[in-house]
Length: 365
Image 1: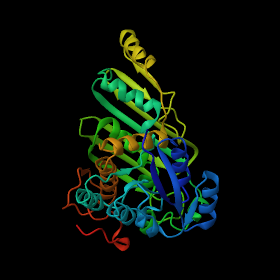
Image 2: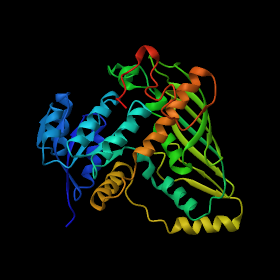
Image 3: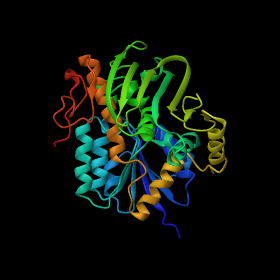
């Protein structure tokens, strides 16, 4: 019989999508308790998803011995402490993006996990598991893509004043960053997922759409460690919302759909340079068997990692790669210079990328 893991959920916003993901994996997970400071939304989720207990006391979840996993779906500034408490209380942890507010906190969490062997922390990057992106990964693994040349990624969404009426949004101290951190981060993770880590970035950022503290528009030029190049654009001022990923290889061009929140899903297009190579690609794609995607698939793989004691499907290194790009982009914006990666402990923004006036105390390292 498959071991069912018991999950305590903290949050009542994006947590709804997590609960839907657990709901599609009822043979693997059950959720007996939800914690949220927003009682109206929290109790509504409990009723919608059949959760027996509601509480406003997060510490009560860490103290329980009948929970296997803590799922953290709270504003970004709370993530590190909640993850720390979860791991130190002997639980596995799932945490929404952006994982933490500095590279230093990621490295400190590595040390915390080293002190608690067997505990696993999984950052959320659910867009990886769309069938379109998985098909590209399969073609690369089969050697059908060839040398990578150029990737272009567009995250062009709309966020108006109503979105920023939520008190913690649009502020350095609580949201920790703007569109690069909270919106484009998924598409940029897909860049790392396909090509590996970035090597250098030059970035422009601006606040053009709303009167907020953080950036809502950005343009980045990136060198990848594998030698390819990428251009990344982000704005929260696009009345027509799109997300688009386009990967140019020597033997293949892969292009996503443009639906803004499902860009990893089919139907992607895969175009080869010759009829013969197109036939080879089409043969591999015809044999591809689609499965679950999004949170459902990521949670399914997390359960497998816990039961088999292997690395989670999204690792702390994956989150570090993503946050290094954000850190380097902010540094480039402030210095007007290209910024190399990886970000080491001697980098000026290692402990925080927040502006000096908003500097937040990082974890002791």
